[in-house]
Amino acid sequence: MTVQWRKSSYSGGANDEQCVELGRLAPGGGIGVRDSKDPDGGHLTLTSVQFTRLVARIKHEA
Image (cartoon, rainbow, N blue to C red; front, side):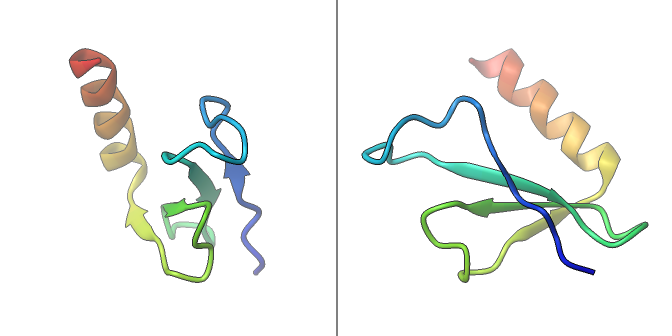
């Protein structure tokens, strides 16, 4: 299965230093999070619950 990565809508232009991409991994495999400037550098794998908690924490601390 090929992962279709999506860049965050909050990522800026070519000079943005904080670019994130998300991809749904194989069924039951969770959600991948990677640096869009280094797509071959690997990714962090999160379950749906972990991803939801991460987003909630980011919103809370922003």
